[in-house]
Amino acid sequence: MLIRKISKCIAAVLVYIMCAYGYLTTKGFVYDGNHFILSNNAEAWENSEFQISEDEIRGLGNPNSPLTMYTISAVTCSHCRDFHKFTLPKLERDFISKGLLRFVYIHFPADETTMRAAKLSYCLPKDKFYDFIADLYDSRDWQFSRNEAILENHAKKFGMTDADIEQCKQDKKITSDLLRIRENAFKAFHITATPTIVVKTQSGENVVEFNGYDELKQYLDTQLPQ
Image (tube, rainbow, N blue to C red; front, side, top):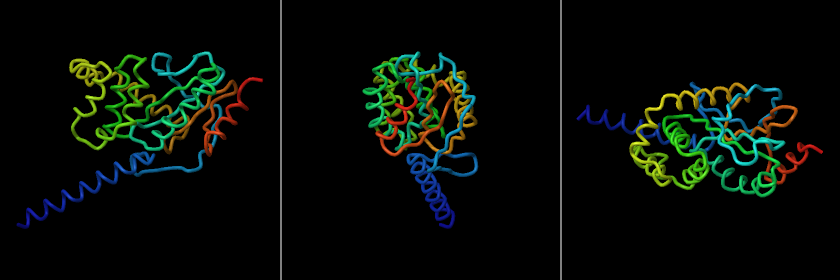
């Protein structure tokens, strides 16, 4: 009886930890190796050295646009979801479709689940990348499930087979690339929360914060060449 009670207590504690971890990551917190951190006051760091190759970029818009926006995001982050669903369409309307802005989604995986999702997005054809990300943001079934098949079923909707998924799982280069990009973004932009919005102009790269789309649009307008 005593062993059974101890086992129940341990199980309850583990469930609590898992739920707390899931809740914090959906709210935009990231784990730095010791604790969860979130900054509400983003600052701007100029002359950063963020490096990502053209092959690694999954972008929307003209590569020769005068502005580039990197959104360092996690697919389990509710704030990232809101940005993707409500702000990105307005950016497409006002900037991307007009050749003024190139939009680049940067994965910032904080756990095994977000890493698996990030890898699948990179294994899909480039033209399916953003549709897959949108599908993940629209769904909640895969986020807290330990059944990998639920996430994999989302990838299958975009043409991946069981063989494709297995090959993707075994692809160590993609894992290495995603971790390198994440680490590079962390060092370059002092990432403390997702999403972190970075705008690259002719003068450098700046982390920006804003209150509402109108403020973001005003900032982008001021950065366009006159």
